[in-house]
Image (cartoon, rainbow, N blue to C red; front, side):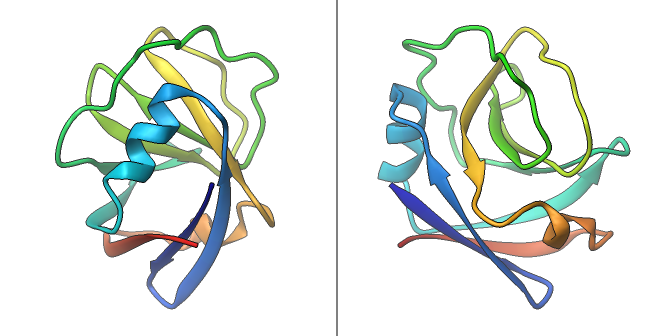
Length: 115
């Protein structure tokens, strides 16, 4: 399963993992969301509903370019800087060509589509 993200003249793709949360996200597409900066290392976008947490577990091998779901808040988290796992964070997949598009600062409309 692959996704295309478009915001602020940036277009990038991600490949989803084979887990229930990622499948649930894929079933919601297409989505029109808002993406914004959170802290110094990530962009977030709130989903219209929470995803299933079935089969989730501790994220290992955290890396720049991870696409995650933060269950307590119901948002996507896309990391453009190093991070460490916290309870409730579920990895959904990875950005295909790095996190450079996420360095555009500010809040923007975000389109998420299936490829």
